Length: 52
Image: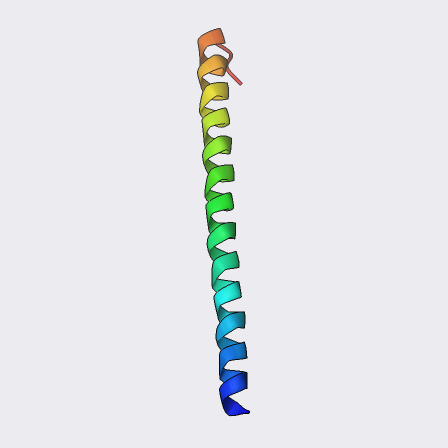
C-alpha cells in the first residue's frame, strides 16, 4: 500500500514539474514577444520625434 502511494506521489510531482516547465516556457515566449513589440513601438515613437 505504501509503495502504491509513493508512486502516486511521484506521478503527481512529475505532472506538476512538467506543467511548471510548460508555463515557464510560455511565459518566456510571451515576455519576449511583448519586449519585441515595445522595442518596435519605441523605435517608431522616437523616429517620429514625439516628445510624449
